[in-house]
Image (tube, rainbow, N blue to C red; front, side, top):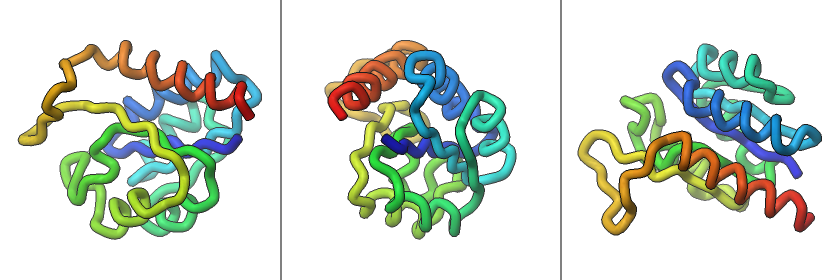
Amino acid sequence: MRIAVIDGQGGGIGKHIVEQLRKRIPELEILALGTNALATGAMLRAGATEGASGESAIFYNVERVDLIVGSAAIIMVYGLLGEITPTMASAISDSNADKLLLPIQRGNIQFVGVPRTPLPHLIEALVLEVEQRFKAN
């Protein structure tokens, strides 16, 4: 199974996702896709198998993975404080890969019916879901 972890800004959320995935599923192939080199670098240092940065890298690679993970902002135009371009959001949304997205509620977007949960708990739930899918393959 090949998984893409997508993040931007400083890559903090992606870094934590990669760390937890690497601990639980060492043999998982993790592709770090950052909106910028700083985010990609943070995910690579956390244990991603390989990484790439920018709009073109995200556009190209989202069709070459089995699963995409990140915050819900990665499918929102101008998400992550404007780092998600329309091309990125469209490519991620249109990808045939399954998507597991964290419902991080920032700015003027709220997910109705989804309780505010601390980030570590959200990441733990995401990692458990990936682990179940990995074992099923």
